[in-house]
Length: 341
Image (cartoon, rainbow, N blue to C red; front, side, top):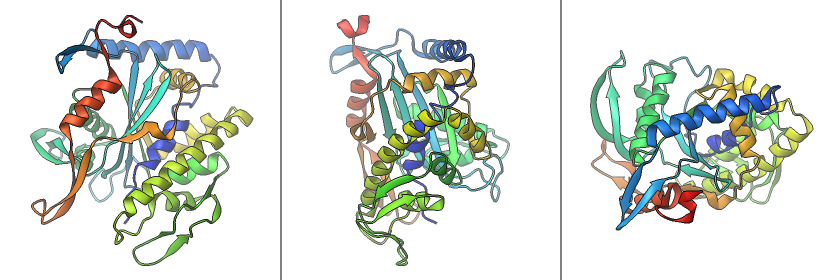
């Protein structure tokens, strides 16, 4: 089965974070959500300074981080499939810089080699081992614990970056997300086909994606072709942009749409975002600047490791480049005017 990748969470970040912002009592809910998220942020990192390349930096307390995960399951997300919770095929960290009104989406490859926590069937900690990030989700005894394990592991990978909230959806959510806004129009930027030769879309074809067509356009690739993953990533970026534009127009025409979407996704979604959280985040999202350059991937390289389970592709993080990226994105140089804001 072709695995679900980055796009599902890119889609979710558009509507889930906007969700419920139109519900009655919006300003009260917004205020409570702001208070809840920021109090947790300050409890974890208030006054946190680090030294990097001889300079002192302070963490930007106005940054809100939400871990969005897509798993390789169908059906009710709370139910185990063949005794496992599933694997995390898509991992994206959504960061809202509420000081500069900037939204970032950072993809973390499922094959990233990092320290993961192994547990037994009762949820008791067994050991920490270096393995693929995708496996961490499967160690939870239920969906909530799986998400909590993912949050801890990604936070550690990102140098103890605070992650205030999480939201996980599965493959059955894609058609719902797509069709709720009336479908999405794209011009296929390449031929989309499987390794068996089944062609779903031809290059240059104008398509109004509905139902399972959306999943196929953003998920399917010919795994026998070198570079097919990059071609798929370009399709995913194209879809995110088209989806975003369509979603904004759809919400303007039907202010009740986000609430209906939230309810429709319940069987396929697990999140610790509260009504207050989403109301606050929704209003913040309306003011955020986002462009395709802000959908990035952590620095590193995918390589074939013949010593990993008989030979598999793994993603090795460029630790120095990751550290620099974290400092540039999440920290402010101490003593600057920006720190005083």
